[in-house]
Image 1 (tube, rainbow, N blue to C red):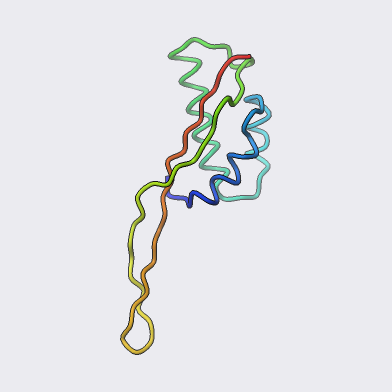
Image 2 (image 1 turned 135 degrees about the horizontal axis):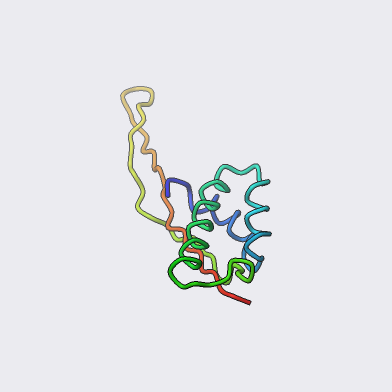
Length: 101
């Protein structure tokens, strides 16, 4: 996902261990930009658990959630006197594991 791992970890730390409904409510009300991306990942994990594993969505909770660093896109920004600075647009690998209580 196109979000810095540091910013995504702040959101993921808030939902770890919470029930599915509580986690989605926290993500919905969070003002952080990364909360929308993490919400999509949690909803996808819930849909996979319901459709593929036939688990009850009312019993699901966030068992594990972590963010790893992905590849960084490197860009160049021109600076004064013909110099240049490197801009690193960081990406994240977001993993959410749901389990039944």
